[in-house]
Image (cartoon, rainbow, N blue to C red; front, side):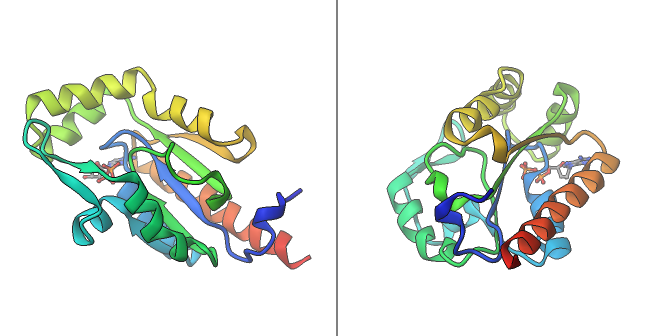
Length: 180
Ligand code: DAT
């Protein structure tokens, strides 16, 4: 069964979310290639098109302007076929997505990845706590129907490959269902 607002899309829109360092960008790149989707790293879009309200020095991050981001992305999402990567997900319109993937990682993996990325200790700690408290998963559960949510472990390269396969299989199944 496909919700009415999704019927016009022949290609799915997929959101890949999760705490920073869980593997969103890497996974989204691989999904885009495997499933023939266009990838949008929302963090990059925010910087490039200045969809923010300035910079937070303490946390080395931009203040997100949610309205600007949604306005900018609305036309991109209209025809489907997009693979979106962002660390927060509650402000996107629910109607945009056919699948919402929440990537999860163990504390030690996340710590190492964020340290390697050169994050300051306070930013590493904040993100590790966010993952332990499953903040992004809870946000996704509040914002999207459980039948389009997929929670996936992203600790190893094998996990990543299996995740890409699962997501690409969903995209293929979606296309077939839309042709019927
Ligand atoms: P995000 O976009 O969620 O911040 P990323 O894709 O940039 O994360 O990944 C952060 C780093 O961790 C990057 O060097 C790739 C590595 N990584 C991510 N997921 C992984 C996994 N499942 N197995 C091994 N390495 C992974």
